[in-house]
Image (tube, rainbow, N blue to C red; front, side, top):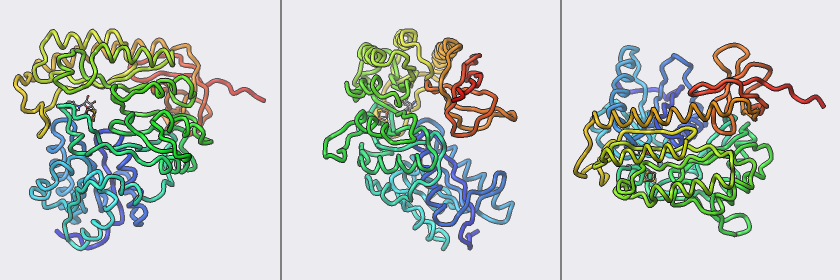
Length: 447
Ligand code: 5AD
Ligand code: SF4
């Protein structure tokens, strides 16, 4: 069934990383500029954007089943929505999607989504369009101004990756590393603050590789950008993610000590604890160099909470090598972490390596690793009980009068009392759970 009318409502469904969340928000803003509004909760949208992720298994299958479900619902309702597939699956498998799924009328890669409105014009006329060009920075200039945001918002400052870890698809789907210009970022950060942001997380696949030229013409790295953004009035908190151990320079370490608005949190993926596995992954660090780096960060900011990413079952990983990952975890004591079973990604060097690990072995390793990470997360949360800290209120809790926000260490904290979304409040942490803490709102000082 060919759609005949321009869409009035949209739904953007983002999967995967925070960069996809950011891209999803920007696509939504663009559609808003076209006069299309978000579909009310529970109602079918006239336009569905599937903003996909390709980093691990079953991504493509998930997209096809989503497309199937959406078109079935459309057929039942007698009105097919327009479907756009965006994100990294679109980039990697766009042509295949167009061939296999006639219900899809737009395929748009992560560097091309600023062209969505033109593609939509065509789609409304029944024409199908694919755009998976990678025109580096053009996208950002073509996007509308930021007018609405959450108290904790994202700002993509860097895209792409030149690291080519042998398991990873990102260098192929997101392309080569590019840094957005300094002045654009300062402007976007100010707009976000004007729109209500209190916290900004600077995003990039390899955010620590960001570099630019400041308004005085001096070359600056991530630390310089953070220090300058810290001067933006009304902005209370800065975070950044994700970094690579190879690009963490002295200045960034120092910024954790000298910039109070930079939150005491570092997400620094290590992936594995065995040097042989790390080499086969084409990571340029060893377990030891990673640990020494963390020591330097902790010396700059004693209360730094650490987070990481892990892959278990990389091709050829022996039991003894996996034990080295557990030993590293024991040594670091992460506040939180993400862990995954290795998933062969088409086109990456590791996918064709000998000695792929059996599923049962990966399952068992993942369970053991997650048990250790959960233990440390719980211990970290317990150790926070009794502290009073600032919480940024992000949303209402389940019960009336309840609020949910984040501590400086990125823990979810809920509390009751007189507050509003966007408030920065002092909360005493009174009880720890595995994934959140209960807090008590402190009396505000009456002046
Ligand atoms: N298999 C499993 N996990 C992966 N990651 C990236 N590629 C793969 C893969 N092929 C994980 C890494 C990375 C995180 C974003 O996803 O841990 O840091
Ligand atoms: Fe992928 Fe991160 Fe390695 Fe880049 S640094 S190739 S994004 S895992």
